[in-house]
Image 1 (spheres, helix red, strand yellow):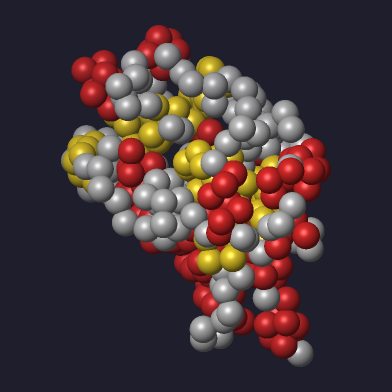
Image 2 (cartoon, helix red, strand yellow; image 1 turned 30 degrees about the horizontal axis):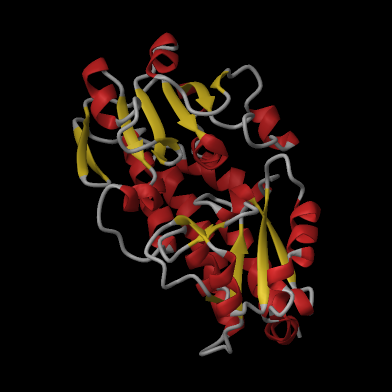
Length: 321
């Protein structure tokens, strides 16, 4: 994504006179994490968290990233920003990978570079001098969690801003995102009729989708839709096809990433014998979001705009008049 000039200017202005007072403590899932100074050797996991650090102007504070090439393809703009920065593991890093680059902070999440009971966790890294900041959306794997919302994205940006002493830059990004969200809400107005929406990430025998704790819940809800899996208490979850048929979505959102193209995913859905009675299949109503748009990131506002315009084109035609 090419960021607009006014955003770069705003970030440049925000860089003046930024300073956090150390030591400082931030809340990361169910933990309080204390920093005595700004991290100098951070490692980010996945496209979304890597993009956040870059947008905060932290390229020089990073020693690497993980978990991108094993599943996804870098767009040219992000590849250019990461030039010279090593990917220390194409998928999930090991403790040894992080130690080898002298990491002092790992920005990741549960099922985003860490798994419950796995070898890389806040508890295994803390004795080695590596702090961990967990993506807020992923906290549902280790604690009770509310329905996904944009406030979680703002919380992550605010916390990262404090950790790295770039709070003003973080606030600029929060304000820019919030303004775009508000414009969508204004165009939708009150009480729009909410089309039933199913998000399809991947899977053939079963479908990987988002329950009410995943970021797509906030995107679909905010775009004036109804996530048909919002009764599932989970973030990214696997469901059977019968449950999709029962809920009869009117629109299907395809997440575009991985070795299978979105066109191949669409064709799979169109040809699936069990789905032939589903409204979205009968009317071929699909919306495509990239991985970074569908997961917590600075691209969520763009995803919201895409979804809202697809679900309620008439509202945006009126707003354009």
